[in-house]
Image 1: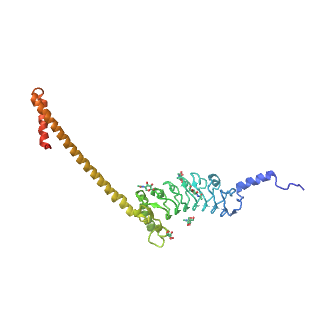
Image 2: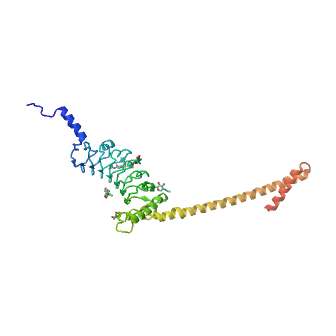
Image 3: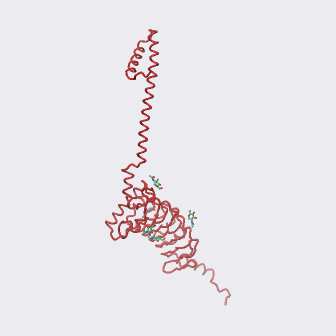
Length: 331
Ligand SMILES: *[C@@H]1O[C@H](CO)[C@@H](O)[C@H](O)[C@H]1NC(C)=O
Ligand SMILES: *[C@@H]1O[C@H](CO)[C@@H](O)[C@H](O)[C@H]1NC(C)=O
Ligand SMILES: *[C@@H]1O[C@H](CO)[C@@H](O)[C@H](O)[C@H]1NC(C)=O
Ligand SMILES: *[C@@H]1O[C@H](CO)[C@@H](O)[C@H](O)[C@H]1NC(C)=O
Ligand SMILES: *[C@@H]1O[C@H](CO)[C@@H](O)[C@H](O)[C@H]1NC(C)=O
């Protein structure tokens, strides 16, 4: 009997290769079955290695993962369901999801996202549900970020740091049914107007054509769960207004109505013009009087010496005449 009972190196290499190809391995302490890999509640600091390549559902929630590595993720080209809820992911790059273009479900809620690259989701044409809620350091979304996610039906943007959104961001989301926007410090200034108007029309379109759709933005019904809590935080005169209704007052403020700042401005302009006019008139008067005095002196000298240029003399006389008729002598 041979003493060395382990497998031969060739066999080891072979099985390793097979493992990589067929995806028969499973990450430590994770559960792998039926094309689903579950690594939830594991205190993982990093994206796990050895995920089977045929995985279709990957559950990574409740860990401490900070980075989603594009390369490793890209091996899972059949992935349709990715749950990264409650981790510490900080940013999404252009190419983070480039290899997992079949994704239908993507949950990035309760992370620490601070920036999402404009084309991070650009290959996710099949994405139906996207959850970015509870990322309080997320302050900005590029207006092209949803340009290619045209299948999106549920979009959760609750409890982020977002102050404003561009309506262009939603231009391509023709399938969108539910949009969650509450818990954000919305800044309802004039830049917000286009989006607010888009929300008004979005509601009307939804209530007209998709009565069955759970439109959380629809106001006044039993389904109104999110709309009431998505309110303006700034400016103070609109604070507390639901953003689904702020379109009309904003339109009034930004387009047809002059605020009291504008009135003060106009008043100041008017006063400046008035003051400038008065000063100009006064200066003209002073100049005229000075000129007149100087001329009277010089014309007296000229008649006395009585020789020289007649034309100049006549011009001087005429000027004197006009000057006298226009400006009463102030001395
Ligand atoms: C998004 O995730 C949060 C928890 O992080 C959850 O409460 C919410 O229901 C999710 N939204 C959707 C639309 O599934
Ligand atoms: C989340 O991000 C912010 C800003 O980048 C940072 O200050 C904070 O420490 C992060 N929190 C965690 C738990 O990583
Ligand atoms: C959007 O998807 C189309 C194909 O569906 C692709 O040609 C295009 O490059 C994508 N756009 C971006 C910005 O990736
Ligand atoms: C409105 O607020 C946003 C977010 O703070 C800002 O980027 C934008 O410049 C503001 N627009 C106007 C017209 O003040
Ligand atoms: C709306 O906000 C209030 C107070 O913050 C909270 O009690 C309530 O549960 C919220 N409603 C929804 C549907 O989120």
